[in-house]
Figure 1 (tube, rainbow, N blue to C red):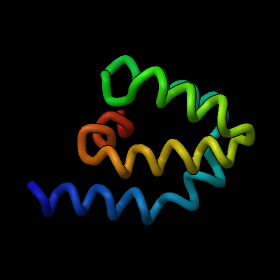
Figure 2: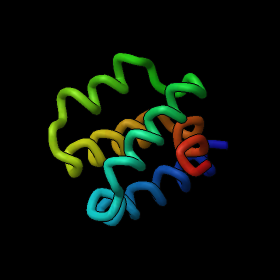
Figure 3: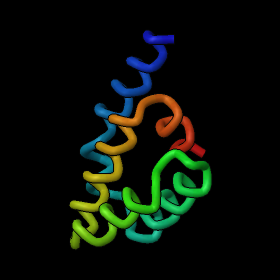
Figure 4: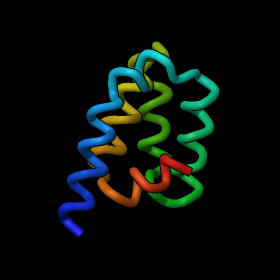
Length: 80
C-alpha cells in the first residue's frame, strides 16, 4: 500500500509542471467540484484555491500540491 501511494505521488510530481502549464480554468473548477463532492477536500480548501490564488497557474499549482499532500484518495479521485 505504501509503495502504491509513493508511486502515485511520484507520478503526480512528475507531471506537475505540464499540468500547471496546460490545465484550463474550467478544468480546475470542475476538478475542485468533483473533489468537494467526493469529500476529498473541504469547502474551505476549495475557496483557498479559488480566492487566494488569482492566476490560473497559481491555482493549478495549489491544486496539484494539495492533491499530492492528501495522498491516494485525492490522487485517485483527481484521475476520474
